Length: 288
Image (cartoon, rainbow, N blue to C red; front, top):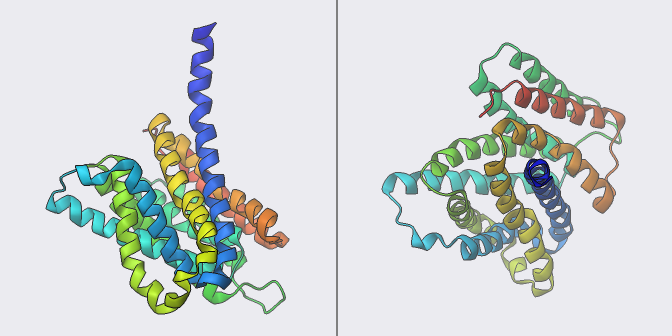
């Protein structure tokens, strides 16, 4: 009996952990939106990265590692892409609903997956993603039309996410995931700190916002990145990609529950297109 139950537990545990990570990061994003009026968008992003970097550094202790010049260069680009990704995503989140921002941002990793696959069926997934983006564009001025600048910031965040994946893989090839992530987070915090100070310098010292800022850093970065690293080591890359495809739906649910963001039928259809595109791309990749 023990032998028959063990594989089941070993299979479902990383799935549960990854789902928990996705819920955590989107819950953190929903709470970050409450900080925008207090800390400003730049201030919120800066404190999230800074506090998360400190938390992860305390856990993974990267100071014990000797870094070569090549590794430091990879970490620099990895951290810069992470910082710009978070910064631009929060500016998108200020203007458009959480679920839509995540769906648009998801085009970054989707583009990396399709580009690296070179299968004919990937044109279908790319087309579906394009349909999703077109459905979200403010082609007509209505009460439900999205802020064009918000869409642009979300797509910039997607581009940075793609770069984050590319440079993160290079950094992860020579370092453990925890060390690479903690160092990348610190570089990201250092990169956005000057912009955060220029944009919202005086607001950064608002002590009343400190508890919520710490919570956003923990649930929005430190906890989910740690959980994702554990899950990725315990499951095939394809399975990881399939499950991650549900993140725009989870973000939409968090937006509904904690921000009262109700989406239109076309907006839900657009998110479904992105999810199916990501799901299809993951399913047609080779097992790793």
